[in-house]
Structure formats: structure tokens, C-alpha cells
Length: 175
View 1 (cartoon, rainbow, N blue to C red):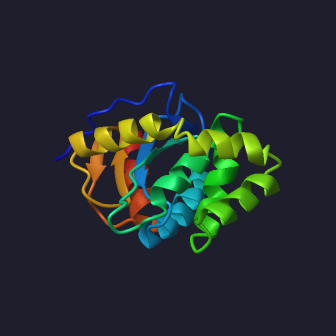
View 2 (view 1 turned 90 degrees about the vertical axis):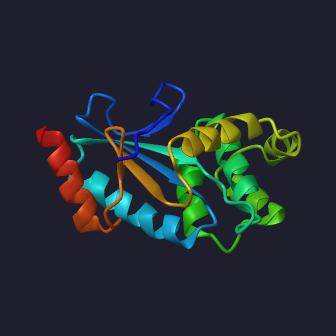
View 3 (view 1 turned 120 degrees about the horizontal axis):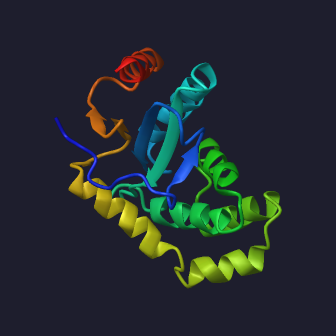
């Protein structure tokens, strides 16, 4: 049984209550089709179990397979620095076929962010250390692909279906 090696902190992107009995951590890649499917499943888990689950998203860009995954993660972090992480997160998964720099600039504009400032930050790779920290914690936790989930610090090796995740959340909240 693999355990999460990087504890959840206030620096993580957390959706839901930090007081929830279950913390669901996902290591994902914005260009990964499996992560996009998991995104919809996680949204539904959060909708069905709003008081039971705190969701944490961590970057695990597989750049050898997904060449735009790291720049997409940088766009998410640039949006996060401006209070818009979850909006950009949702946009990236909804538009996986639009992750080239020009398309990301259009997304930044649609979110109402300053395209030039975000572009300079991304061009200077201001958020790359954060992405690499997430990636490193994933490697230490035994993550080899995306999506990979941990429930209350224990790797969830069952399917990533809605039924499986709901069941795992319910089991974890009962212990």
C-alpha cells in the first residue's frame, strides 16, 4: 500500500472544507485524457459528498507524452496567483485540445486576467518550482502515471469510476 509522501499543506490547491473527514489528493496532467475523465468524476464526488471531501489537486505533467502539460500547469499557477486557479483548472480540462501558448493567452483573457502580466510570469517560468515540487512529491509517493489518487494519504488503486471513488470516500469517512 503506497502512502502520500507530501502532506497536504496550506500551499496546496484545496476545494471543499479543510475540516472534511476525507482528503482526496489527485496527481494529474492537464493534457492527459484520463485526468480529464477523472476531473468530471471528482466534480461529481464533490457534488454528492460536499461535507465529506476536501479535494487537493497536484501537478504531475508527463512532458514526454504530453508536450503542453507543463505550460498548462504554469497557466493554472499563474491564474492561482491571481485567485483564479479553479476557473483555469476547469478551463484546461474542458479544452485539452487548446493548450498551445496562444490558446492559453486567450483563456487568460477570458478569465479576465491581465494577459501581458500573466504572459511575462509564464515566460519567466515563475511557477515552475511549484509544479516541480508537486511532481517530486508525486514521485516520492510512487506516482508513475496520471491520474493517481490518494484518499486520506493512502493510494487509491481501485478504478477511478464515480462508484468506486464514492465508495472509497464513504469507507474513509466511516473510519
